[in-house]
Image (cartoon, rainbow over all chains, first blue to last red):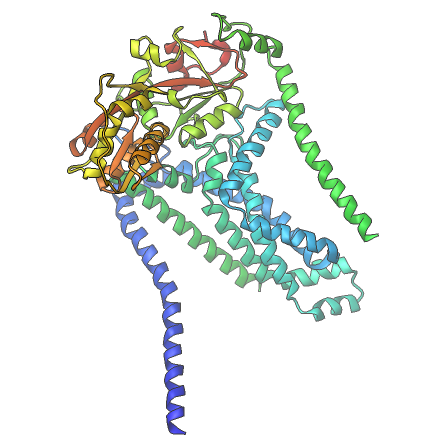
Amino acid sequence: MESTGNRTRTLEQVMHIVFLATATASIISVILISVFIFMTGIPTMAEIGLGEFLLGRNWFPRHTPAQFGIFPMIISSIYVTIGAIVLGVPLGLLTAIFLARFCPKNIYRLIKPAVELMAGIPSVVYGFFGMMVIVPLIRDVFRGLGFATTGFSMLAAIILLGIMILPTIIGLSEAAIAVVPRSYYEGAVALGASHERATMSIVVPAAKSGIFASIILGIGRAIGETMAVIMVAGGQSIMPENILSGVRTMTMNIVMEMGYAAGLHRDSLIATGAVLFVFILLINIAFNLIKRKVR
Amino acid sequence: MRRKLMILLALVAALSLFLVACGGNDADATEADATDATVTEADATEGDAGEEDTDVAGGEGLTGPISVVTREDGSGTRGAFVEIVGVEDADGNDATVGTAIVGNGTDQVMTSVMGTPDAIGYISLGSLNDTVKALKIDGVDATDELIKEGSYPIARPFNVATKGEVSELAQDFLNFIMSKQGQEIVAEGYISVDDAAADYAAAEGLSGNIQVGGSTSVSPLMEKLAEEYMTLNPDVTIDIQSTGSTAGMTGAIDGVLDIGMASRELTDEEAAELEGLVIARDGIAVIVNNDNPLDDISMENVKQIFLGELINWEDVK
């Protein structure tokens, strides 16, 4: 009896340690990444000059003298992300509500796999689609309306990213709405609400936390997306004039130049990564604050 | 009832797909009507382009803003183009206009120019194909013979670079490239540098792996050379990465690559650490969309377009 007890206890302790180790592994990776990025990024920003780096509008890393201003890239990343959210969140959220509460079973069987398939399509394929379809479409439509554009523009990036974050938002929001207790809905209907009223006013707000999570993930994907955006955004490293101007986001800048950057140029790209990191942190904090206030 | 709904949805989806495709065609048609260039004129001159000196600039040419397409900063093609054409500011820095679309690699430039009717760009002459049109510079065609003569001005060397002690295998590959067989392969699409090269004799039992990387312009040539070399030496594998000239030089300096490729001269910093070897010469073709009626452009105009001083097609002479 005693020996069996010991064995079980040891096994318990061993498994305890195993689980603790795996959890620590993920925390350690995040810490290692942050340490590497900030250890290189912060001294570089100090060397270039924080104001010059973050607010400078001239990006000429291979000129003599070199200039490292990433303000156009920061602005482009912000605009493109906001645009993608404005396009993707309403579309995704309403689709999720439809799928969860209004969709007939046999149509659901068509749409749900299609959405899941969208999530699996590689970014390069999206980029290629954007370059072959969205860019010429924008060029032809807006030239016809009298605006000068090459099609490779912020708008193309926004449309493409809006489409790309749809599966993320739809998937998570639909799951969140589906797990709202049936009693909420039935209570509302019992009090006289119509199906639509009950869903929109009671069920959806109850799924707020999950919906917010899906939006954060969507923003994260939009701000971090690189391959698709590289093929449609144009790559100009100057301040965008309007939504039809070509742009270069921070992620594009890193990918386009990392292969051949050396010395201070390479370090400035790592510093750009640090700025991206900070952005994601800020977005997460902001959303956590909003969630807490709304509750 | 449900089945009818599904059929209806399917029809709506199919219909919307058709509308999108038709919408694109309609927009193209209206754009062609709106610009001054008549489509029939363009078709006629395209047919004549190969045969005679049709001076198409002037009233019959393309109008509207020029969409400039350039390469990424570390591109050897860009470096060579900027230096030869003179797209530089007073300090000798690259002064390509800020609104130029940046294509990553030869293929992206070609795709951008192919899909944008008023685009202009530049690519390796060896990569030129039917999807885009090469312009004559000051009346001189972009062909290998005219480059060899010296009449076509925009040409640059293809360099391979190695660092320090070269492995026996890599050295043998380089010997192959500079041999008669290697230079024959070069001459097929580019300009060979040694017309009286010696024969290559494959040594017995060579095996191993060679990492080659760098210029996207040199890559197609390098792939042909590697294929032939691997046929002669079946136990050897050669991996080629197309990352851009400066990335290739950086990779060679860092020791990541055995052989780096550049489509330009080595810079002073690079030459300090690497041994360069010229394996071929290649022209840089200035390309426009196939629907652009322009055939001939002056070097001065090319410079002004890429500096951003010349903005509209109608001002091109």
